[in-house]
Length: 187
Image 1 (cartoon, rainbow, N blue to C red):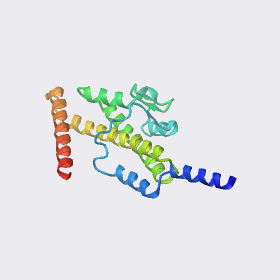
Image 2: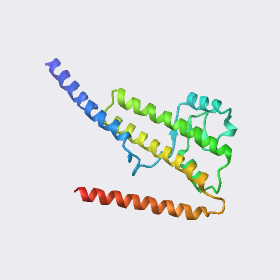
Image 3: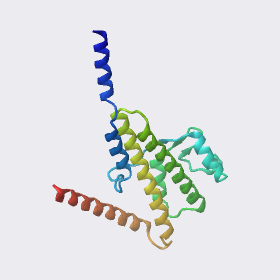
Image 4: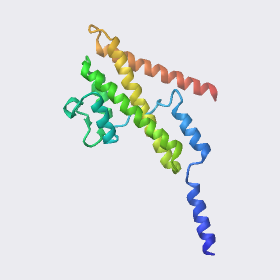
């Protein structure tokens, strides 16, 4: 009788874990071109402190060289605030450009670590979905930062930043509308 109860309990516990098929779907989803749609970048992101230090050393930077939103001693990045501040700046200095490129490297490594965990670790479905959503948020942040670098690079000093932000919002709205139309057409 004891054996049967334990066996039932193990089956219940195993039922909560991710199947190989579910795992493959979640990993494939991260590689989908539109994984970032509807996902916000994380407000804060915890990264490995030693990894952050290595990246800083690679560019010969100290804590004082980093943006105020990067707290290397804690391994914490106020990601949303950093992106929002950079979007609203008129110009990006060369030092900020290097910091953004460095941050993109850090975020890409963090996303790969989470994707590897999704591929390899034994996770419950809830844990896997949470990990997937965080990785998608990181992908969104990476794309935002890359887009920011491109736009600031091509933006002439005479162009009004407000006008560029409006164009960006209109473009995003058009993409959303197009996506919604495609979804409606498929039904």
